[in-house]
Length: 119
Length: 104
Image (tube, rainbow over all chains, first blue to last red; front, side):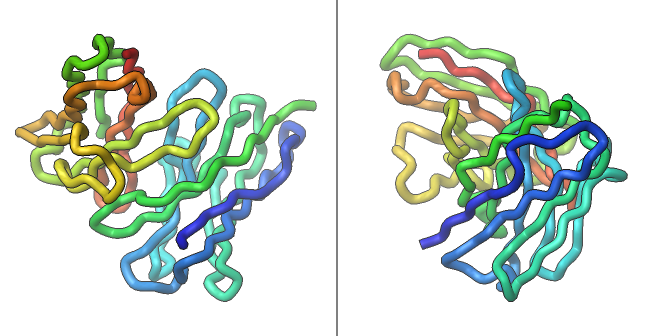
């Protein structure tokens, strides 16, 4: 059974660094043609894509956030970590990780983890 | 590169809902569609323009013609009320539509 679970702080202060972890089970992060993306949904707004890591380790980022985001994977621990530096209240959102299954696109999603940026 | 969706679509129960997604190069690539209800994880409902994952009802279908793709829900039910998003790839980056709120 494929599952993804997001974890991280619920509250972070402005200018701090946010670190979120996606823990996966039921598949291997080193399997060919699989990847992991992070999305977020600010309150009352649309979902938006943030970053992606391919099975070969290649990374891709939302252009507007490229300078603040880092995505990395640890296949041995079945983790994918998203780091966002210099957070701002506008980064308040529910953050989701999702599996990219190749031709089927994003076939499994985590339940999301809420993050509030406030002093 | 952007994907444009109508902000909202409203249908009566039993009617057909059509949600469109427009983008410059959509005819050259595949689109997938996602259903998202408040407080829940998004769900893949269509991939490769028109294929349904297992477990997705047959009333969900998709099409792609030129620069516009569409998600069609036939015999719409109250349970289908949700936000729907289209997605495509631009090289190695994900392009996500702005979402359409379907009201039933």
